[in-house]
Image (tube, rainbow over all chains, first blue to last red; front, side):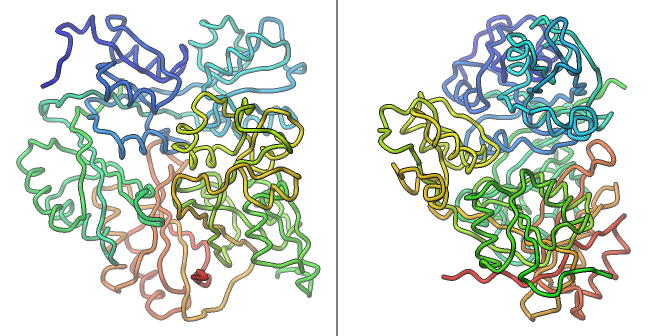
Length: 283
Length: 283
């Protein structure tokens, strides 16, 4: 059914660009230099490339440990038919990057993605309270902006400093020292059980009192551990919600098959987003 | 304990400005023209004014029916000690506003708050696919930008068109026809039960499997209806979550007193954000 190139070397990997974003770093960590990495301008574009088979894999951010869910990714998961085949957790270390020779006192504006500005909110208020903040589509774009300026600094990772020839004026400026982002690897594929897997599903609960409790009951009965639950507007009806649930186990595991049988009796709709190996942190 | 002015006329109401935002509209609907309305540049500023007693009331957006939670408001509710005393639901009708005489074919960029751009995503892709999108801190700022330009349009409400002297080129351009935003009214006050109330709490669940299920169990046992549940990063530990729960009832109601007794046995921490009358929609 899937018409994929035979070798990983020919596989296109679409990631949220431009070059030098944390997603670029996650894609490199996942695939190395073997694949053809293609930077995309938006998360929507990545899902579109996967659905049209113009890319084999996609890498998108889904959640940050300080700032929470990336809504755009969640909404694309609701709308598109693409599977999650892996997850990756990357530590986020923000730096204040400046064009060569720019000193702190001459900075008039600081550019970054809105989530990064939020992740450095306290540090910015303490160190640059009067400096204008510029929201960019990505930190790499902020770095490009700083590169062409004589008074704008950017918040971005080390990789962006190297790629865009900027100096690191301050490092590790994020408010939470253990700040990290979870990325999803997407494809039109299924993965086999490894014995240490996670499954992500979307649940449209019934629109009745106690419906979330009834959705959680089978997990409790079968002792399946939830690792995450999130709500998003269903987009079908105003003030109706869809639940994103991550749990331990693989759709092919015995107990998870029973879980789905029970879930189907108490939900309006379930969409399986994928079963994939739990990410093992290198600690 | 509270040192408030005696009359509502003297009360300062801080809202998310500038003038012409949907929050301004919500503040006017809640308080009429009797109060001194003060526009603030950020949600953080409103909480700061309330905590320093420089404003008596605050009005902030907390959730949109299409785009979901306003994270900044949720994070301030985690950090600050301010009570929710009312909620308000305002229908959001976006318009494409242009400076006098600008035609659709001469628009080179469209400015709006990122949530409004997201709420009109499909309409923009269908009607202005090649036009640059500019993210502004608010729709009112986008209107100000359009006012001073000869090629930039703005997405904003009718009130902004009137205030900033712009023409409405297209009306009701939001992707969901029943798009609305929920606003919270904040103060350092408590409200008395009305018989039709809602309560908002923050719950730090125990970091153990099944903890969310155990948090929901007392609601089920006592037949207390949840109206909403949201997760946010706890900001205490990476990948730990805090739950925002809204339910029907008032902290002084008999069954809600029992509910809290049971909740305290199965949670690490509970913060009561306030009990307040459920908003009655005018339909």
